[in-house]
Amino acid sequence: MGEFVRVTGTTDVKPGHGIVAEVNGKTLAVFNVDGTFHAIDSTCIHRSGPLGEGNVEGSIVTCPWHGWQYDVTTSACVANPTTKVERYEVQSKAPT
Image 1 (spheres, rainbow, N blue to C red):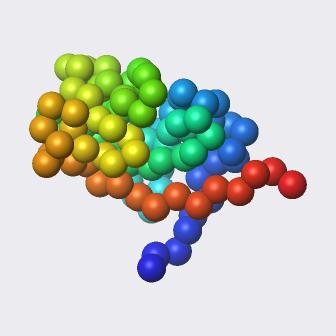
Image 2: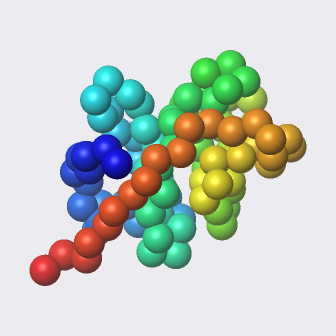
């Protein structure tokens, strides 16, 4: 298993929103879906749009460039679930 890297605080990503983070040379999108955090590659496979800047409804993020949608909990494209962006394991702790 890889080493975890702190990206942000749990209070920094509001429920129903996402952020963009650079981690070890990769651009990730981190989303808060009802208090559960999910991290995927921020680059849309269609035309490299910035998924981390997309609108989130439930667990679906919409790429702001061309409207491709992904389920952030699985990283699967909604229109073609066999097509996925990279998904990363997340470890979150509430502030103490």
